[in-house]
Image (cartoon, rainbow, N blue to C red; front, side):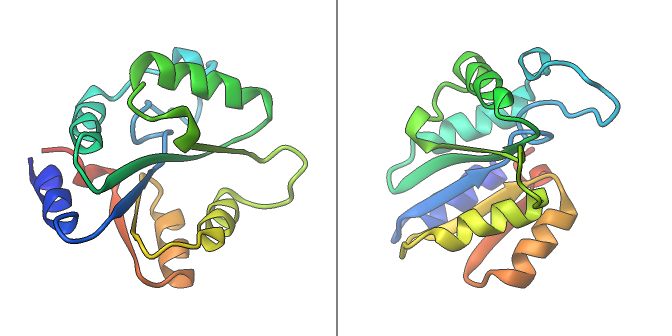
Length: 151
């Protein structure tokens, strides 16, 4: 309830966009595992909280996720369709590293820099290095570690 209540309070007088990473936030992430994304275990406690947040007025929920190759985009979308369909297809930003010489943090920064909005932007990620990089390079955005979602 803590995180849900925090978002309710933030969205009382402004429009909020929340960008959620998938790997490690709503889907189990094992660095040593080569499983297809479709076989990843859903993190139901986080999904449940985000499902409630998606119902709030003035809040738009987005996925902002990076994958290794173009084919993984379809797998991630299928996984979302199955476990978190409240993430509207038009609000799923899944970026492939394929043929790009950029890191995940650079790709996320590039996307977030491209936004032209007066909405409050919130980023939820499990990777502290990504959160630090974004915080060092983007102002006026709120950042939360995935553990903030868990009550």
